[in-house]
Amino acid sequence: MSGGRPRYIGGAERRGRLALRHRLAGTERAGTPEEVAASLVALHGTDPATVYLAVGARLAEAAKTVPETERALYEDRTLVRMHGMRHTVFVFPTGLAAVVHASTGLDVAARARAALLKDMAKGGGPDAAWLAEVEAATLAALAGRGQATAAELARDEPRLREQFVYAAGKSYEAMHTVSGRLLRVLGVEGKVVRGRPLGSWTSSQFRWAVAPAHPELDPAEARVDLLRRWLAACGPATEADLKWWTGWRVTDVRTALRAVGAEEVSLDDGPGYVVPGDADPVAGPDSPWAALLPGLDPTAMGWQQRDWYLAPELRPLLFDGSGNVGPTVWWDGRVVGGWAQRPSGEIVWRILDPAIPREAEAAVAEQAERLVGWLGDARVTPRFRTPLERELSG
Picture 1 (spheres, one colour):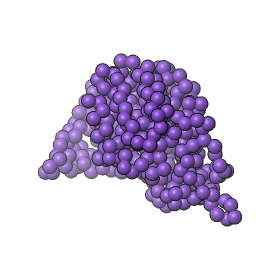
Picture 2 (tube, one colour):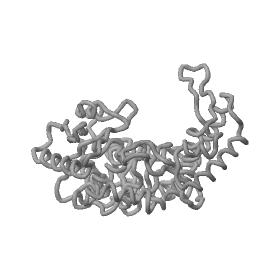
Picture 3 (cartoon, helix red, strand yellow):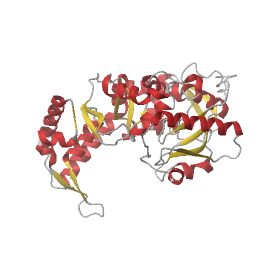
Picture 4 (cartoon, one colour):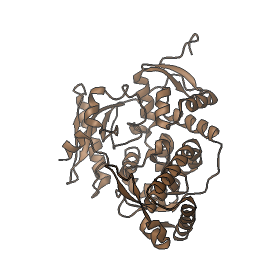
């Protein structure tokens, strides 16, 4: 603070911090996927391709993206794909699993199990005691196999094939299978995690594995730990940003901010917070930079209030109807356009900001060539498609 007032941090400085801390400026690129994940706290994992594309955009040697990410996820298990904030699938450093589970997973897990039992009861399915037996048998079978699909587990425990009516009498009535619902609940509870996909790294069909053992932490302490890590990566941020990213109640956010000792700063969109000692000016990269980031990239989705890096008029083309961002083109800390891959493998992109200089076009073209170079024969279509991505992909 200066004279008792919070220091003002403008958009330009925030964009500079983003470039350095999110490993997007060329000089700041990471050596391993583990470094990328640690720098960002979490990578969105709902769309499997997002993890690899987000890592590839930030690795110094992009050609290593696929083998190194597979090594980290499936061989060394230094990264884990599991449910986290807002009941969303993320990829975290494995050492962070206990923190995420305690800080955000416990409440979500309780609601998910209660909903399953309620839906089973309404749909004429078995009771909680039956489900507990099936759960125990399923976890034992999974431990014996190491990794397995839901179908493979159902061969070991046939009761997983049991079905019940969901939302009977409603327009969206459907038959639910115990295996699908139970495995999702076990995932939220931190008992199972996503394993290797059935196909290539772009496949959305995957195996399950028993979750790595982790200690049970105090939820309040875990929230403090997670908030400190996220503020260090994404600060300054507003209270609204923190509530949105974590999915916590506002009282939990405020309690954790106090426990962290967060310093208040002044932002264009209101009061913001940084970790202690991080309010001093931060110089950005020495030169402008370009990046092609995937749909659901953690940088593009990192804040609820985004005007400092994304002009409101660009959003209709770059987001779907549920608020999921598509593939974006960045220039010097701002979203300036979008990109897509065509069936031929060509990467096509469009700048939506007419004020972008000519040097940006050349830099974006260079990043497109870099992306084509490591993608090879792989074809990626975002799980959540946006108007501009659909148009560009042809």
